[in-house]
Length: 113
Ligand SMILES: O=C(O)c1cc2cc(O)c(O)cc2[nH]1
Image 1 (cartoon, rainbow, N blue to C red):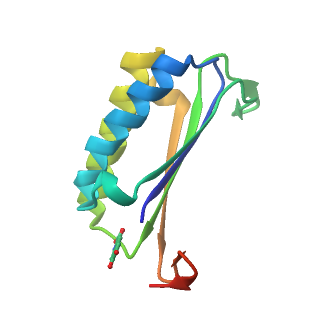
Image 2 (image 1 turned 120 degrees about the horizontal axis):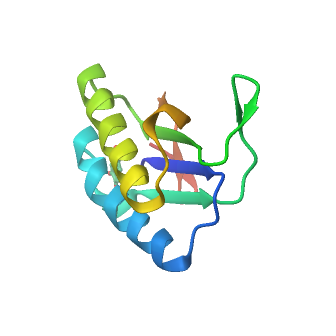
C-alpha cells in the first residue's frame, strides 16, 4: 500500500498529472510494489524554499510504504522520480527532495495489515 505524495511549485495540468500518476505506477515496482494499491497525491502551486531561497521549480516527494525496501531500491526510485519530474515538468534534480517512510502499521478498509 504505497503512497507517493508530491508537493510541486509549478502548476501541473490534468494531462501532466495523469502522466505522472501513470509513470509512478510503473516506477513503484522498483520497491517491489504494484500500482494496484498505489495512492498518488499531487499538490501543485505549492510554495517551497530551499536553503533560504524560494524555488521557482522544485518538488518535495514523500514515499510511504507498508513494510520497507532495500536502500538501493530507494536510491533507484529517487533517480526515476527525479528523471520523471525533470522530463515532465522541467524541475531539476537539485531542487527535488525525496523522502522514504517505511510503515509497519498500515490500515485499509477498516482494519490493519
Ligand atoms: O503494499 C503492500 O505491501 C501490500 C498491499 C496489499 C494488499 C493486500 O490485499 C494484501 O493482502 C497485502 C498487501 N500488501
